[in-house]
Image (tube, rainbow, N blue to C red; front, side, top):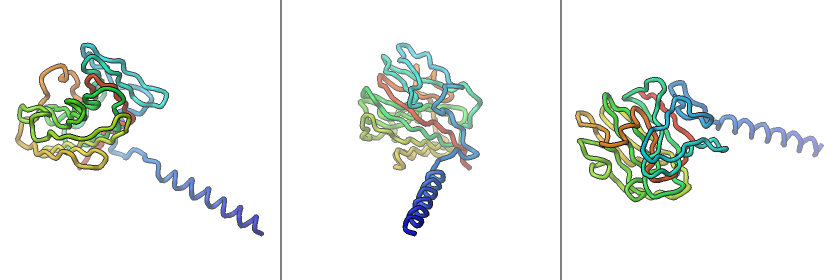
Length: 215
């Protein structure tokens, strides 16, 4: 009798555990576009920066951007993406170097801009450019303490009136952009449009890049 009760309890425990695990799996929603799935670089092109580092996918299905002399990265060559009312989720970490490990270039209406994460010595976050001022000079500039080899969830929301950024669910940028000039910083980074992932003299890893339509 005790054995039967034990066996039944065991089955219930295993079944409930499997159910919880199944429910906890995060599946893409209908409006989600998986831009990087861990298996290939389909629809991406290696950006032809001078002195760029190697780019590969490792055995853990992580996208590796090796340290280059300056910029290294990829730019999107797939289908057209929305220019407002969307979010991009990126999971990334810096494994070597002391400059930005995630330069996320994104579309905004008829223009583009770049979210800088961990730049200018390793701590600066900001958007280049707002009203002609880059990420270190405009009101989006802030300092954030990034640890090496730690994954960070970076979420960018773009609407016509605002650009908002969260790091691990903490809002770090909330910039009103309606009627203002949103543009790229001059230089090689302009090659990363319409959507790009870039590092600067830094090795970084990425394990998720998803675009979600909002509204």
